Figure (cartoon, rainbow over the protein chains, first blue to last red):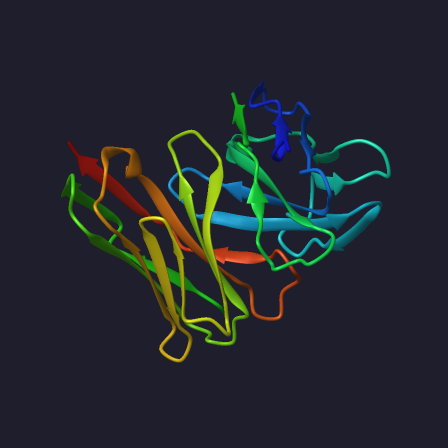
Amino acid sequence: NAGVMQNPRHLVRRRGQEARLRCSPMKGHSHVYWYRQLPEEGLKFMVYLQKENIIDESGMPKERFSAEFPKEGPSILRIQQVVRGDSAAYFCASSPNIGDTGELFFGEGSRLTVL
Amino acid sequence: KQEVTQIPAALSVPEGENLVLNCSFTDSAIYNLQWFRQDPGKGLTSLLLIQSSQREQTSGRLNASLDKSSGRSTLYIAASQPGDSATYLCAVPAHGGSQGNLIFGKGTKLSVKP
């Protein structure tokens, strides 16, 4: 049973470009969460999605950031017009559909560097 | 607003020592607490999940306890090994937050010297 898969693992963008980060949850999981870890800071919740629905986006910056989890395919975190302050590790987590204990399973992360 | 604090921020011990990592949270109305391990440049590995109705959970050399009333959890590592070197994070659900909206501490960076 593969774990949470994220790609790319490393992404370099210039200021003003777009970054797209992808996440495939564990098999049997339909809840996806995105977190951001800024250098020297703790992980911060960004958004919680189920298939075709955004459940909680209270941690998402108001501009330039968006997330989706389509019926088919991975969840996408999209950052438009990136700035240097977006440089961070972005982690995706998932949890099961049934018998959810609240335990989250994390991917290896996508590390974004904005030049 | 829920806040999570982990003490110490860093810890260095010789191999074989037993050690305790501390986690405190300000809002005791939690339904679970989760401990993770993060290796440099890697993702988070779930170690233990304690439900609010439980007082402790054990997995191998790890034992986590939870005292909701005092807002504390400890992670006990027995007979530490160099492979235990990592950053240990604790997290609790955000009060009033949705499922999966966790508040993380900044972690304790553990170094076990051979």
